[in-house]
Every structure is written in structure tokens, then in C-alpha cells.
Length: 231
Image (cartoon, rainbow, N blue to C red; front, side, top):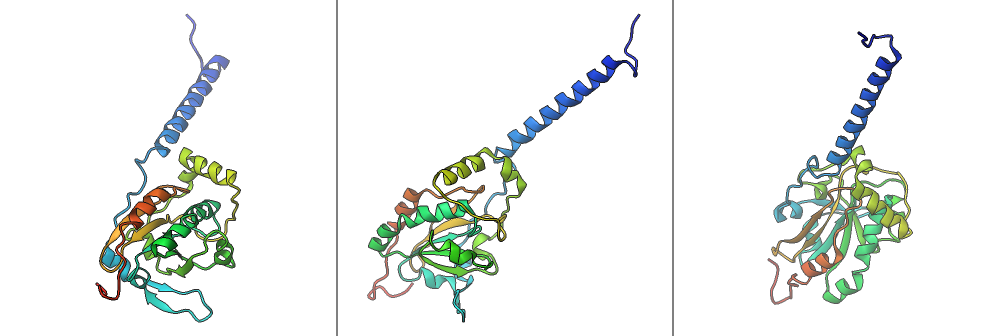
């Protein structure tokens, strides 16, 4: 009889082959799971009252602090919560939203952005892509009520690679300055107490809002007139 002994080369080869197959299988399963939404943190919808009470700051030399509801009280608003101003994916989404600016102006609805921090010249360098007013949300409330993060799993998601290729192909570039793991989003908020008409939360890096969905929501905004007063 012949048997495989520990020192037999065939025994060693078989063991290495088994380990290799196991590693490839584990990597394939990990890749598959990373590209499902199973492990993504689920966003919790924000209430209008929650957004109204957020403190924002202007980015002037002498900043003014005010309640966020001032942004949409009269005419509603479209608000982008920027994940990271230096990110080329965020710059691409900002440019998408800016393409709606002529139509938003026609409808009388302003476009704003909020950032969670001021790092070097990141906000100034973001402004060529986003020409609306930008405010500071130091407590990161627009990124809640429950902040969601995407860490290094984002690097193996096919959707992120597709989003990256699309942005690169569009000529966008960026840098690695600032915090970029807390996911952002886009809101369309009606005037007064009309409510939140659209709430888009990034599920992964570069997950852009559909501009047509933004326009559809904006068209539902009921502009306040002097006769109607404030809600």
C-alpha cells in the first residue's frame, strides 16, 4: 500500500492547493457580499423639525450662525450635503446639480450646499463646481439623524468603480484632503411647513441623485407670497 506521508511532496502540494482554493473562494464570497446592500447602513429619514433646528454658519470672516429653516422658509430649497469638497465624485455631483440652476432660478427656488468642515482652501476650490451659497454644518446634522459611513469596503464595490470611471471620464479630479467617510445626500424641501419633498442619501461613494427627480420635486414647491404669510 502507498500512503501520503507529511514529507511527501504530493502531500504538501495538495495542502497548498486546498489553501489556495479556499482563499480564492473566501475572496469571491467577500467580493460578492461587498457588492450587495446587505451590509450597508440603512438611512433613517429626517423629519422636517429635525432639519429646521440645525445650526448653520456662513463662511465669512465674521460668520453668522442661523437656523437652517431660513434657507427654505419662503421659497423652498435644494440642499446638497457634501461628503467632501475635494472629492472628484462630489464635484461631479455638484456639477450635475449646477446644470439645473437655470431652471431652478426660473422657478424661484435657491440651491445651497452644506459642508461639515473647513480644511485649507477646499471650499474655495469646490466653488467652480458649485456656484450656490455654501454653509458650514459643524455638528454634521445634515448627515444624520444617524450618520452613515462607508470605509474601505467602498474600494471593492463595482458601483463605486463605475461612478469613479464616469467622473474621471467627465474630466473631474480632486484630492484627499478632509474627512470623506461620512456619506452625504441631497434634499428638496418645500416652503414653510410643506415638508421634505425629496431625500436622497448616498449609499456608496459617488451615488448621485437623479437630476430629473430633483426637478420633479422642485415643481411641487409652493412658493410663499406676501398674502400667504409664513407657515
